[in-house]
Length: 114
Ligand SMILES: [Zn+2]
Image 1 (cartoon, protein in one colour):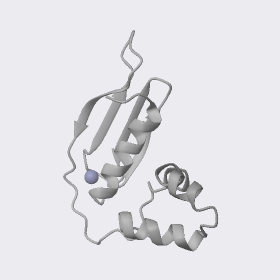
Image 2 (cartoon, rainbow, N blue to C red):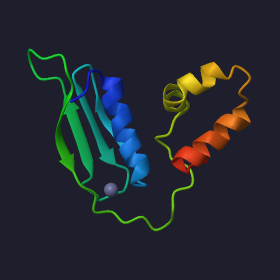
Image 3 (cartoon, rainbow, N blue to C red):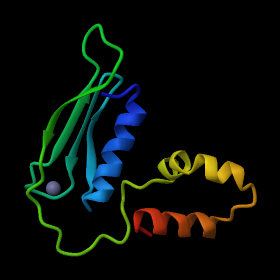
Image 4 (cartoon, rainbow, N blue to C red):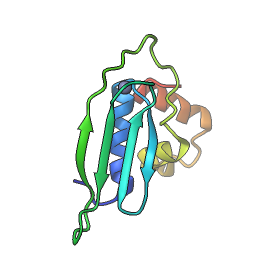
């Protein structure tokens, strides 16, 4: 269960990054959010929605992947600059002189993606 759609999306992306999988957004509306695996033929899917008369986002469908990664992902398409900004907000604000290079290094160390 999540307070906001943003928190649900971030949890899905963090899971995708840790499992070396890429999700494509299938549905993204004010009350529904569905992502599917980017690999053709893989049933991997996550669906969350806001139930009627509720304010929280609830994940109701999680279909596991059956796709097999041939190569280690070096770059992750779901790891966007806005997600990095959110996840590293405090660190970036505390160190006002933090250069892009330092952020790139921190991302590499923490998530192992370029
Ligand atoms: Zn998959």
